[in-house]
Image (cartoon, rainbow, N blue to C red; front, side, top):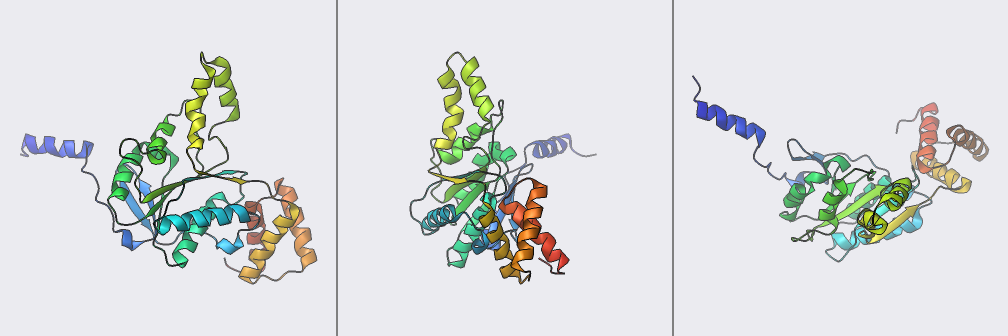
Length: 278
């Protein structure tokens, strides 16, 4: 019969497993953080597009690339919030900039963190803090609802608490919202709280802790067509300018708007009709 003490010890181990060892950061350039149990899983192939194919966001591209290169070279750099219109390349830009920094000979790791896992960020930072590598911690589609307390965990990354943010970690986030929370929620708290300014300040000021705010706005028709032309040139898809213009405008009309995502979706359809694999 199994010793009762052994069974108790095994049960406690299942309830509170030992912290996972840090991975071999030399095995990949990108990782995804998971919890239950905590682990950093290497990503061998990152889904991304080339930096040169991102059109209509030149200022944001240049600013984020310069900031990231500064950080990779060991110099001062800011956390960045990429906010604005859906489908305009916010997350694509983060991944493309990371690839460009590596192409330029710098060592830099990209770690993706899900918004739902923000409460575990302290444990993740302990893994990264003790590494000799430099990391971009990336959270895509970041936003908070009325009763969401995850934003408090984010302060550990932006402000660092008593330990301070690790010098080898920088935080990039994307969001459709400039202040990371719905405008109607802000107005509701202002109108119902005993002290309206204090009720809103803690959450709204979270976005102020990002040193870089990079705005992404809906593209015009010329930019939309230029995006598609860039994809055609990069992948060798041949189509007349007149046909491309007519088809692309019809495609965006059926989608009810223009964006980089819509441009890529049209191009994917076009490439498929031409028998080209992407």
